[in-house]
Image (cartoon, rainbow, N blue to C red; front, side, top):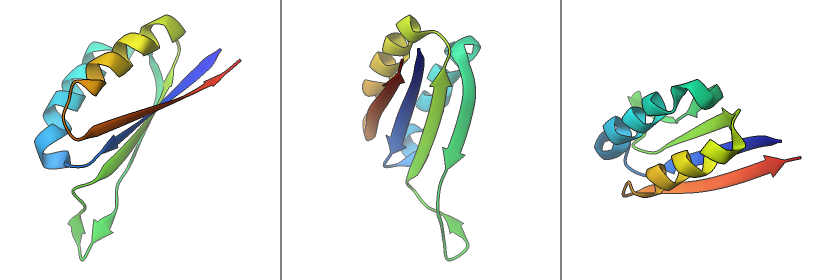
Amino acid sequence: MTTIIGIKISNRLQSAIAVQEILTKFGCIIKTRIGLHEEINGQCSPKGLILLEIIDDKKAVDIANELCDIEEIEIQQMIFS
């Protein structure tokens, strides 16, 4: 199976450090990481989106649960069999 986790961050300045710590902790199970954010008038948007391809479906639940504990974060998952 392949699991994709989408992480929508509403306030990057407030949440970025906590998100990065969790992604580093689970770095060995993240096959692909894509970060998307908008630019508004030459400045980074406070919102962001991160897509993760997870190689260990059982641990995908663990990383999603830890990310859910961060305020202003929304998590969505896609699971392909």
